[in-house]
Image (cartoon, rainbow, N blue to C red):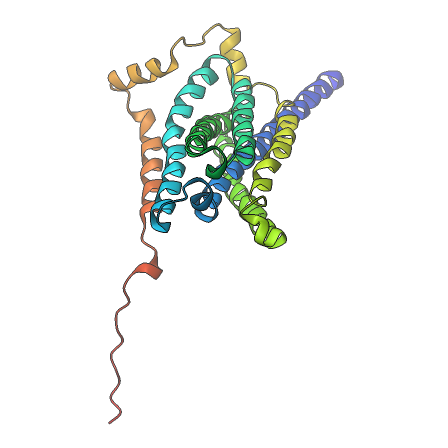
Length: 285
């Protein structure tokens, strides 16, 4: 009896350790990817209009720079479809390693990219291509990291486990903004010539840390069972579409509600932008 209880306790401890590693790996990896994604947005506002879109008016240069940022957002659904497909067929861990490498390599290459004054029109074209790869990487990372964390959680705490990768978004924003702020102060006038490149090149170090953490995570138990039972779906997206066509929409309602709430959150007006109502003047008589 003592041997059996000791064995079960050791098994629970082992599962708990893998569960914690999955949460840490998902959160750290997501923070690194969003660091790269948000870093581009900051650079697009500060330095890219002058470096990659010169010869235009200041207004047109800013619009062109933010146009390249939009390309990354447009590529996110493509990345989610690609890596979601292979994540359901090959496994979450393998695809998450690829998305982390894809995002990291793209970000480092942006930091090495010559400007318009060096290679002409090829500079903004290459910038757009690398931004597309960034969008594909973060699109595949987001769903995969949430699934990996959730599938390692117990049935009672799957929602909590799936929420941890969300912490990577504000962490990535905070680190990228702080990095740019620090380097803009440290490099001074050299920020537009070389200082802006350092945060992009630093992504290589962050990716190495993320890979070290992520490679220690085992595949999720749910996918391991599916693979052992040879129940892997050949075309997962077709299975989802067939389920919707059959009228089994109840399982998708929570996701649709969550999407609607998130959309309203982003579309809400800023109270500071609303016109203020003039206060009536008090009579002095």
